[in-house]
Image 1 (tube, rainbow, N blue to C red):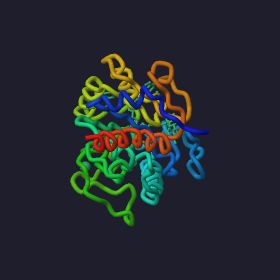
Image 2: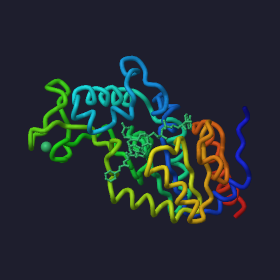
Image 3: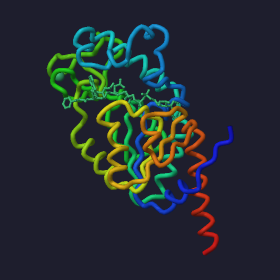
Length: 255
Ligand code: BV8
Ligand code: ZN
């Protein structure tokens, strides 16, 4: 299927100075990382991620939850960012105000070279103490698992936001502000089902932004977005970038 970008989307992006992007698990799909909605595989197929990603699950079975994150961390560390992550790094250079908000905990945006990232749900490559909350600089995979906090003896846990836990206040405020101030809002690879992140595209619309969704599947946003670009982010974002970067080059050559 030949992908093409509607002219209005290109013009809006060329005219904008404030662009906000929200990414979800779908932007890492082309790196080979299954999304939250895809069935888990192998040993983990009998577990529901929304059940495992909770403080209750960790309190009940710390070793099981620790091992699930260790499994995901290994998969992520063995994988690479994909063209979608890299296109966002390049896209950022064309805007005075560009905010990247991610729901993902895989750290691929950092590895691709993005620098201004709001990680709403944390990052599973970092750990903190389940009891005293103090971040730990590292841990020993060979000893007792989950590793023990050196300060209070509690268990270490992944530094992510679990279901039922509040998001980091300051990051959430930053994300709301970036949505409110955006002239163009790109919602990429998210089922827009998890709150409060899923409210960000709506906030941008209410503030007058031009909302574009990039996703191979239809989500609840598709009917309210100005455009739904149906397709994989790894193909659509590099195409979008060509139009934006190409235009800049053309106008530089005219001068
Ligand atoms: C909170 C970290 C309050 C962990 C995550 C009813 C009961 C209980 C709770 C609730 C409820 N209703 C609402 C809630 C609140 C709950 C929630 O929203 N639940 C949902 C399930 C209904 N939210 C919370 O609990 C939040 N906290 O509300 O706390 C509070 C407030 C103050 C004080 C105390 C408490 C916390 C939510 C954060 C949860 N943690 N991650 C971990 O990862 O292990 S969320 C987790 O799910 C992921 O981070 C991810 O963000 C999210 C899944 O969403 P997506 O990213 O959209 O991924 P998904 O798989 O869904 O979709 C992928 C999309 O990609 C698809 O559309 C697919 O088509 C598309 N795609 C596929 N391939 C591609 C592609 N797109 C582009 N290109 C491709 N190639
Ligand atoms: Zn501790």
